[in-house]
Structure formats: structure tokens, C-alpha cells
Image (tube, rainbow, N blue to C red):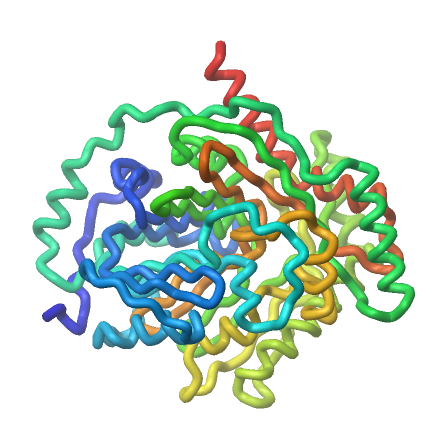
Length: 461
């Protein structure tokens, strides 16, 4: 019977200690790392690694396969409720710890298409990828790096000795196959096709059927080697506060997301939607002007405000009445490739509502769909050639102490069956310009696609 309060074991801290500790586990199914990007950002504090889940939940369509200690069970129940049930079923209720946000619990991927379990959507986009709609592990140990306090802590609910011995003796430099692309990147729509879809959205907007629609294209390439190497390479050059690496039985997911979806700490809710993007420039004075240009952009402010209102409504369905606030509007944040406009919404989670209920009420995030959200999702399914799968879903955790944190899975790649896929999109409104919107999708992956192509070239030299 596990302890109801965790054993906390202090480990030697160095900036990249957790990366080295995770490396030997990176090829094992259900090993995962949430990484804060090592950037100068208010949320770049904690890294979390897990492996060896006691239970896994894999949802495809209307079925969730729950695997626990070799036993398999299928369920048609709501996937969000099943995750909460599995966390509660451990019977472990530790006290929240301000410096340890994850004390074991659920961690993994809620894919964009899990939204089909919430809303009635068409089935026009082709489901050509095999990754599940939801892939969640239930974990009873984790290692947490706190870069603010410079601490590394093993959290466990049984004797930490054997686990610690295994973690500390594994070889972080074990030979791995170098990651490389074996074909050029190819988009799933031509430049002309993007323009045609843009015009269709403009027709919907003029007809009053919606106010904003996020249109995305997907880039794909053949690949070989270890995706962990690709993640490390990208992270060093394009770190973001909500990055993640997930190793699943048949896939790997790489996320370099700058965007928080939902956080719950001490029942305090926070979401920080991004709407508004301009590329970084090499010349410092011109780069500063880019930030100022974005800050005063009436179009981007209007677009951002639409999503703030949408999320206020989504959160308000669960939050304590009267608690929804917007303490920060239109903040400009810088990242390696782009500037983003970010707003902050806060609220209180009632004592009788669970974090998973909140996640379901807001899923998928409005910032990557449009407004009204459901109508925008319908148009997205009709316009985009393939389903989004992992992209624009959410990667995160629900701790046993009822804390939750999650990203919007933008700047996210999926590798399966010898191919790697990367998406980029942008919100289209009535005064959007087609050429600028198309360029924005390229700007968002400017520190991803060329970097992996360069890695490929480096390996060939």
C-alpha cells in the first residue's frame, strides 16, 4: 500500500541534470518530460520527468482502453472523467507544495480531436495518423527540477532507494541513432489552395457565420533515428516555457509551446491565450520596432480580445460566479522566432468541481479554433485536409494534490511510422490580409523546420 504523503529525496542539482537523467529513459514507452525551456520567461521554472506509469488510458473515438498491471478494460465513459477517476482511485491525497507542482498523478496528451467527444463535428478531414485522441499515464513517481531555487527532487510513494539507484546509474550517453530527415518538408496544401481556403473563410466572416477561424497547414517529411535527439536540438535553439517530449508505444511527440492553456493551483485558475504574432528581426533596433508595432496593432488587439471573451465564457461555466477576471491584456512577450501578444484570465475553481471538469469545459482551447468556437471547429474540419491530431490539443498534468497545468500544443511535432509532421496556423478575421496570414504560418515554424533540415545536413557532412 503506497504512502499517502510522498517521500521527497533531494538530488544534486545542475541546470541540465534532469535532461541527463531522462536521456536513458527517453526511448521507453510512456516516458515523458515537461520542460520549461530555460528561457527568460515568467513560467520558465519547473521541469518534470516521469516514467513507468501504473495505469495508462488510450482513447480512440468512443473507446478508452485502460491498462493497469497487465489487465485491460474498455470504457465508453467520458475520457476526462476517466482520468479524474483514475487519479482519485489511487487513494493518495498529498498536501499541495508550492515548490513541487506535480506530486504524481496523470500526465500526457489530450489531442485536439478529443473535442469530438464534447461537440458534434463533421468528419470531412482525413484521419491519416494513428496517434490516439488521448494518451495519459498515471504516475506514482516523478523528478522535479526547480530552476528558481536550484533544486532537484525525487517524489515517490514507496521506498525511493531502488528507484534512485536505477536513475543515478543509467548511462545518459548511451549510443543512439542520430535523428535526420530523409526527405524535404512538404506542405499539405499549395500556396494557391491556402489562398482559396482563406477566401472561403472571408465569405463566412462577411456572412456573419463566425468572427474568427484559425486555418492551419501541415508540413511533413520522412525521417529516421531518435526523436529525443531532435527534441534536444530544437530545445537548445528554440526553448519555450511549455515544451514537452512524450514517448508513446508507436509515436513520439515533441512540443515547443509558448502558450499555457489552463493552470489550477490552490483552486486558482489561470489561462494565458496568445493571439497576435510578428517575426523577430536580426537587427536590434528593427526588432524592437516589431514589438512596438505588435503592441499597437488594432487588428491583433481585436483578435486577442475575441479569444479573451471566449475563454472568459468557457471558464465561467465552471468557475465560482463573479470570480472571472482579466488582470492583463495585450502583453507583448518575445520568443526566439516571434513576438506574441498574450493576455491573462483568472478565476476560482469551486470546491465541488474538479480540474478535469474545467479542462473539459474549455477544451480545446479557443485561441487555436476561433469564435464562436464550435462553428469555427466545424469550418476547420471542412477546410483542413487532415485532422489535427495532437496539434492544438493539450499536453500537461493533473497532480494528486489537485494542481493542474497544461499547454496549447502549438509548435508541436508528431513522429510515427518513419514520418514527422509539424503544423502552423493563424487566426483569420475580417480585416486579415491573405499574404500576411500565410507568411505568419511560416514565421511560426521558422525555428523548427529549417533547424531540422540543418541537422540533417550536419549529419551528412
